[in-house]
Image 1 (tube, helix red, strand yellow):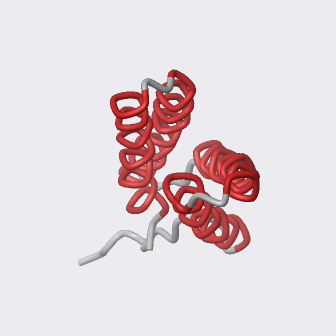
Image 2 (cartoon, helix red, strand yellow; image 1 turned 135 degrees about the vertical axis):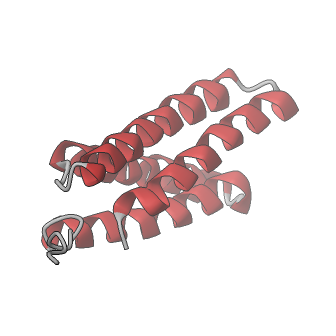
Image 3 (cartoon, one colour; image 1 turned 180 degrees about the horizontal axis):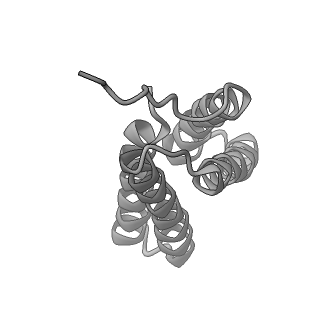
Length: 120
């Protein structure tokens, strides 16, 4: 499975979460954090997808995805431990933790595996 297949939806979920947090609670921190990190994830997913179309890996995108997911895991994990609230801190920390493990696996295995071109 290629990293961009998960990164783009993950980024959209984070952006939507930030917007929803702002709309429901008026939290500018949710808006800034969600939109900022979500757009970084979307950018990384886009870069990875574009590199894949060129039959290459984007290690910059892979490391950016890993860093953003790890930071979200840490920050939202700390918030969950402080508040005990599953929504949104626990959910975001859990999803981000899973994504961090996935990205670390992709780093360890050399990124997206690209099949050799077909020859007829």
